[in-house]
Image: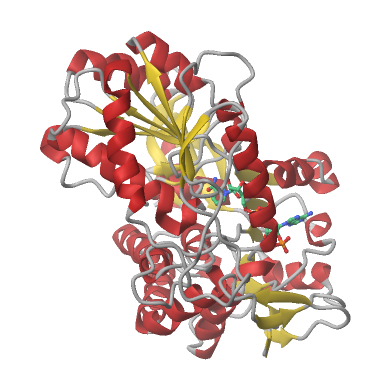
Length: 516
Ligand code: NAP
């Protein structure tokens, strides 16, 4: 069994006392243990601020870009070993694991390209100067300078590689050092990636630290120029928002939390069309990919009333082919949930949905392939149908079941599906499968302000989209309300969180000289 360590103050730190265990969720075999007891979080953050910050700020965007490129390459070079780790510690199928590991290397490579284009600059200047007086000389510029603190990244259990990569890419390119704290239960992949970065000596001292295990009083050590970027559950987010440094010192916080994402089959969609085929493919993949443990997964499916039965039949047929079991066993297409806590929460969530909707696929029972008797955190893929989605108080519009389950519901007008979709209370992404432009305008623009992203699939691009569940670094990731109100990625927009926007006013000639 492996003992995980944290990487702080430029050295590996072994915690004392009672350790947390990391298990294989298919077999419950203990893979590793870790503890942060005795770790001085204040010193760890200070080292990052004092050593990593100046070193990164001294580099140009092109210089920081080279760091990201090297990080991406190291992950890619060790891809197979990392996939094996993700399968063992995360319950991922190989395809699930690729989604995470390749997502990390791809996002780092994307930001490396952006940094290269920015070249020798060390900070960003936004747009053109604004004239501030009658004469042309007195002007104002907005500049984005790296914040002189540390970026604390707290990640969820489901994406130990991508979660590290997507946050690290923006922070390091902006010029801020990072301290990453993965979810303890699946920390093996993040730990190994950081170990690889350290072995390859890619980053300057203090630019990257790792907390392997319990958070202790870490967030209480944050100061005014630090930022906290959190991905996880809504209740943890509420706790973090109330931390003293956040309230007192305006520590900047970004939250990526729960989401009741919807897929809408447009009113014009014809059964059997390319658009329809992509809709069925995306919905079934989102129920089973990563065993439904994806923040962007489709939890609610809205279809025109006349298509309800056909859609139910088509999704059910596909779900019938899913083979649940140990991801290392031949033929398995869906693995276990990641933790025992997840199993408990998902079972409770499924009961809640079953109390109000008809369960048409998945009766709660499962006989996982390649697993010792009674072991593992398995649930079957589950589909519900809710015939009266407009009823008030339905859990399907309020409670995220973070597992392989979704609910199919009918709608009868563009206006009503917009209202139903918006009942999710703010989401990361919803998707629309349609070709009729009037319907697309009414539905997509009707739901857009309740989401961070709206993905429209129409016939001519049906074979080109990766599906709404894939977060692409070119577009923002995040969403209002329940989804946390956060925003990450989106090309250079992702750097703004790690930068201070300052209006600099003065003589045009002087500003031109100092901001060049
Ligand atoms: P979680 O229980 O909220 O944990 C998330 C992270 O917060 C973990 O690293 C956890 O560490 C840490 N944490 C817990 N309490 C803390 C505290 N008091 N101070 C500092 N850190 C603390 O969430 P989860 O179970 O890992 O993830 C599932 C949830 O995440 C789902 O609801 C899902 O919707 C959401 N999610 C959202 C996105 C998104 O991008 N919007 C992406 C993925 C997941 P420990 O593991 O050590 O407890």
